[in-house]
Image (cartoon, rainbow, N blue to C red; front, top):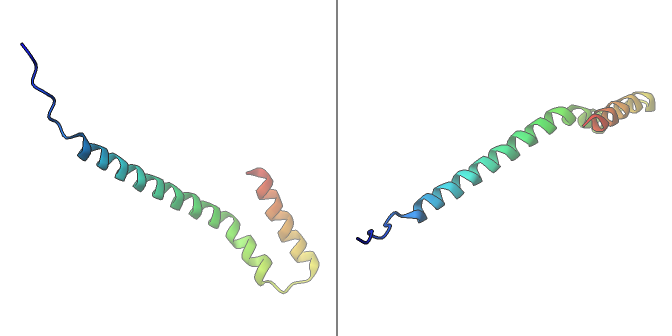
Length: 71
């Protein structure tokens, strides 16, 4: 006896899987961007907006480079 052909719709499942993959990639990018902006953001803002003498800016730059080397 012959089996009936497989009539499942794979297209719907494939579209759902690709959509879920895209959503997960977007979530991952958002989480990584939030992590790096919370880690480097305050230091970068202090470097850009601070009108301090060179010594204070040098300490901030050293902190920035220390965090960059640790990652």
